[in-house]
Picture 1 (cartoon, rainbow, N blue to C red):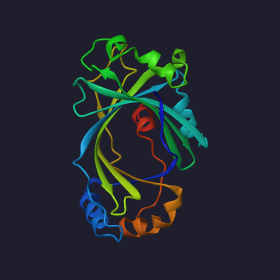
Picture 2 (cartoon, rainbow, N blue to C red; picture 1 turned 90 degrees about the horizontal axis):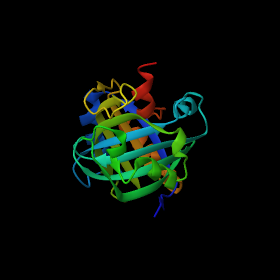
Picture 3 (cartoon, rainbow, N blue to C red; picture 1 turned 90 degrees about the vertical axis):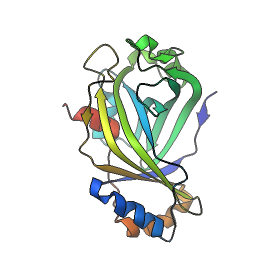
Length: 225
């Protein structure tokens, strides 16, 4: 079964690693009283793209509607675990996803892509409405994510750091060993419904938030262009 998430506003801003304590403290002390609902965890995302890297072209050209295909799992990069296949759609500042959850298993120890995810990874891509013929594994992005939620549960903030990039174009087999660290520092993202956009100034004033464009996937490959 394919799940479709509601559309929501997603805004990003980059900070330095030295800003982490400032961000957490000011969000917690703000009028929205943010708190951490659960501990941080590591996220691993395997991104797919066409051979001409159409997703990067969409980003660089500032396309108003963009699509990314990825599979995501949590915790250790090389552990076996359940995976979510995602088709993420973005239109200006609004985003939504098509998801297939808990039917795929990632085996990052595998020596070839046919065994990396089961059932077959390419047939999974087809089920969410894309042709698997022009999609290939392009990059794995790994990072630690902290979650904060406003006391009224209307706004969610994620803080991502320790970004690592595993370029999958270096070898015909899955690469989970050779990586590069990002110089982006901290990626903070605000997520909320459009009806709650009036609350944004309360966050902006608290943490000097200025929305900017940033794509972890594009950053992972553009470093080599």
